[in-house]
Image 1: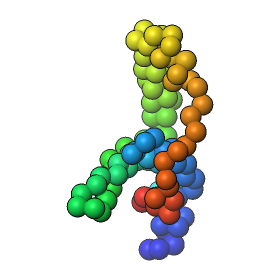
Image 2: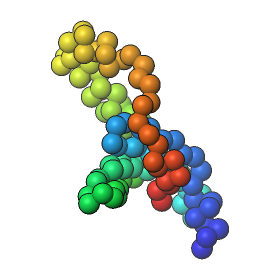
Image 3: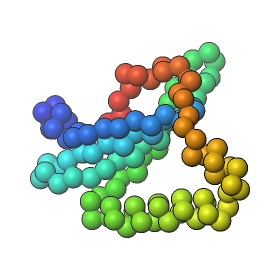
Image 4: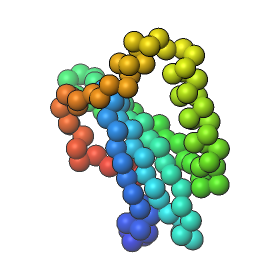
Length: 109
């Protein structure tokens, strides 16, 4: 069974965003079909310790184009219709990562 788990994950990319981290993982099924999982992990503090709350979306290859089109359309709408020029400029400015990396070794499955 462990061999299947090693084979299942093909690619992984992490995006840190404050107390949240997003994981984009490409995985394979037993029949060598591919899908993407998008996981939001949020660090929660309680009694001087922390834990992680996570939410996961499974995106299957037949839905990639529709998903990308809807996501891009939504982002374009926010940028063009809802944000001021100043807010848009701030959004598009590069941001240096300043938060300590407690979860360097984390990997969601």
